[in-house]
Length: 223
Ligand code: AMP
Image (cartoon, rainbow, N blue to C red):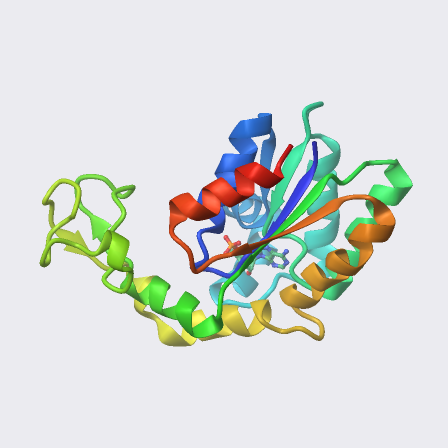
């Protein structure tokens, strides 16, 4: 089972992705995490990628595409959930060419739809509990509003992550994501057009619902 997942920062892509990953016991291949491993390990690739990542820009294709395709090839027999790649129309085409060439079947493409302003509010509203970063707290989402200024789960102190408050950085990431001509939405539409001809299923999820209702909708569509 091989799955691609698209969704803007703030859409709950991580949560929904891990659901699909668990259901089929897939390898989670996350381009951003692969870069972070290289940076942590001090590799040449990591050094080159870091300057782009620090500026909030995409790492050039001549570094990113071979790196991701290589990790895909090494994936286990159960398949993969690819997350964070492709992020541009060029990457989308190169990935498709590589899958065709290697005879790899794509089963699902999941797109989480969320208006840009809603995604931005969600990121800026996120609050982190000092006792457990997985306790959900967001001052802009009614279902998980903190209890005053304390964690809604355990009453712990809350704080905001500094990168969640950096509007310029959020806008830059969303400029890339919401670009329907050459950016990430262009990549997802490339797969949406291809789906009926190529025989995989394109699943659109409304990211404005509650986490549980999105999960239910997703699980119903994954067979
Ligand atoms: P992420 O963890 O997905 O937010 O990725 C962190 C950073 O890694 C991004 O801001 C980019 O600089 C870089 N990156 C991740 N995926 C890609 C990709 N598909 N193409 C180019 N750069 C990427």
